[in-house]
Amino acid sequence: MIKRGQQLYWRPSRVPIPVMVALAVVSILCVTAVETFKGQDDVADYYDVMLKASRQAEQGMEYLRPLRGRVEPIDPSVDPRRTGMIGVASSRVTSNSGHLPAKLTSVNPNWAAVAVKLLVKAGVREGDVVAVAVSGSFPAINLAVYSALEALGAEPVVIASASASQWGANVPGFVWLDMARELRDGGIIKTKARAATLGAREDIGGGLSQTGIASLKSSLSKAEVPLLDVSGYRQSVARRIALYREEADGRPIKAMVNVGGGVATTGPPGIDHLFESGLSYAAPKRAFAAPSVLGYFLDEGVPVIHFSGIAGLAARHGLPEVMAEDPAIGEGGVYTARQYRRWLAGTLILVLLGVTTLAMRSANLALNVDQPGEKPKGLLRPKV
Image 1 (cartoon, rainbow, N blue to C red):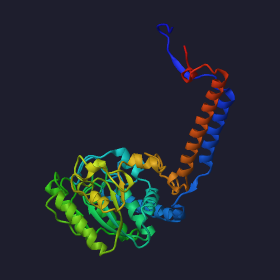
Image 2 (spheres, rainbow, N blue to C red; image 1 turned 90 degrees about the horizontal axis):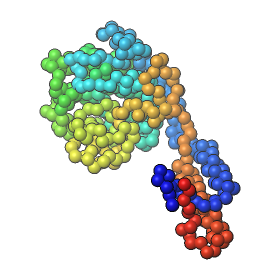
Image 3 (cartoon, rainbow, N blue to C red; image 1 turned 30 degrees about the vertical axis):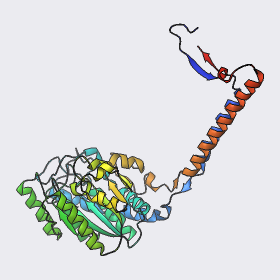
């Protein structure tokens, strides 16, 4: 009888110690094999391209730093590295709230290597057309994406949103369109947006003051980027898709890249979070409940690269979060050219399960031979 307060544990009876030791050894060998025999990453041949893109992004950040200081002093309390890529808490061109740690994590030129890696995995090669949507929320990643596309020799079709969330490119007179213009004038980048919307609510500058809208339109005019004049978010989705197709001129669009959370690109609140960050080929059915540019391209079978959830994306690609010092080019797991062989790991798991099953059956069979009168259920006994 089991007394009150005692617990009942079950374990196989009389399993020989050598069998347990053998199973432990086999398990260790399987783990060692998976760790040792890693395969070559399918983007290993693009290591030089990744470095080139990251160096271009770094050059661009250094070029913009003093320019930002002339427009609005850099606040070291929110931008400790004084990168100039971090905006302000509030301004007349701020579209919505932002997460400062994510913005700080984004200021790393090695994001350009991440962009190259994801583009290559999506099948983008030299001369391919890539649809791109950027807002002002993560200007450093915008620069990284531009640098990656130029390093690969792809042909980007960019549509921008002029406004930015808190801590992004939300300094009036120095929004992303101004930054990109300065970078082109300085010979750092060549990429230019084909058009831009005002962004913010409904993609028409909803919630911004007339002064803020006037400031954004001034930035568009200086950058010589035409305003995509739309009446609301749904029309913006349709106009954006039409412009991408028009600029592709019958050629296939090999990938869609989005930076930030523009409403026309990711859809309205309620579905915008359903699009996975990083590279994806599908989304949950609910993500298609309302029109969005990402939903359209996924439905068309076009791979989507979505730069959102920055902290998680950084962790997946071996990039550090909020940094105390400027990162060096070439730092981060994104440059690692070896990856696990999934087929090997799966095979060894099956082998280990098979060996374990055989070992346990052999031990139980031996017990039955020793005790011919016992029923199989007697192979398990309580331990109190």
